[in-house]
Every structure is written in C-alpha cells, then in structure tokens.
Image 1 (cartoon, rainbow, N blue to C red):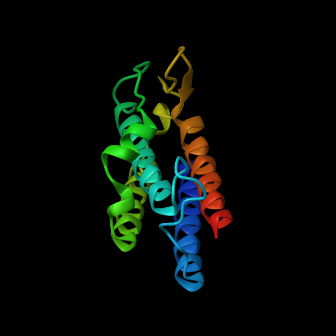
Image 2 (image 1 turned 90 degrees about the vertical axis):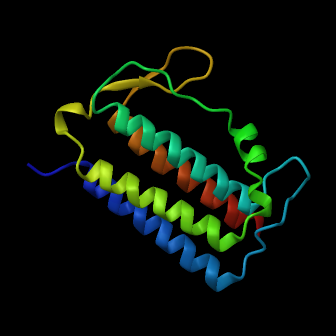
Image 3 (image 1 turned 180 degrees about the vertical axis):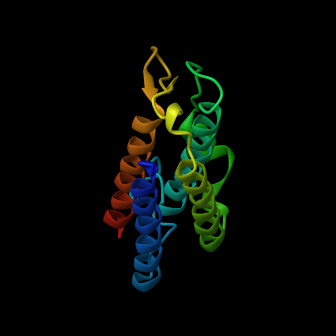
Amino acid sequence: MSNPMTELTNRLIQTINTFIEHSNQTGMDWDYKPVPYKWSGKEIIGHLCDSAQINLQRFIRCTYEENFKLVYAQNEWVAVQHYQDVATADLLQLWKLLNLQIKRVLDNYPLDRLQVQCDSSKDKTELHTVEWLAYDYLAHLQQHLNQIIALQ
C-alpha cells in the first residue's frame, strides 16, 4: 500500500527548491526588516527551521505515543538563535536539510499512525492528527515564503 504522505512531501521539497532557486535569481535582501519589530527574510527562514524541528519531533513521537503537548515560543526562539546574524546560505541549507528529514520520516510513516493526535496549542487543548499537522506544516511554510517574497 502506498503512503498518502508521499505526494505532500514531494510538494514540500518542490516548494523549497523552487523558492531557493527564485531567491538565488532575484538577489533578495535577506536582512531587510519592514519595521524593527517584524522579522527579516533570514528570521523568517530561521522560524521555518524552528517549525521544522518542532514538527519533526511531533511526527516522530506520534509513531509511539499520542495526546502529548509540544509547543514553542516562536518569537523567543528566533531572538535567542540570532538568525539575523547567520549567513543566508547556512540558514537555507539547514532549512532544506531539516525538511529532507521530515520527508524521510513522513514517506515511511506507519499508515496505522497517521490518525494519531498530539496537542499543538499553547493555550487550550487542540488535538490534531499527524496527517493534519503535515498538511498544516506545508501551508504554514508556504504562507511564510510568500511573506518573504512580499518583502522584496
């Protein structure tokens, strides 16, 4: 039986490759911040690295447990990791590698665990299935890539 996640993960990697190719061709200003309290392109990619790490942990843990809570303080994570000071090429490489690992995990995901749930909400309990989290992860990533393109 084929894994329903494979189409999603292929779209994920295609989205990343297309974005990196586009950014290389357009000469983006990765350091630009529209206002001091908004993230730059670098910080958005850093946030996407953080999101990849958290979601990778969710996907892995859901293979053997369920109903656990795993959240993070996104603004604090971006600030503490000083993404604004990291070389753009290093950030893009980290982001791509994290997503390649997500692809490996989801492409081989146990089909009987795709409906397992975990809590991804900071305030109240919000249980979501692995399948829902995977699709939401891609949508979140695409939203932030569009945000970076809009900065230019």
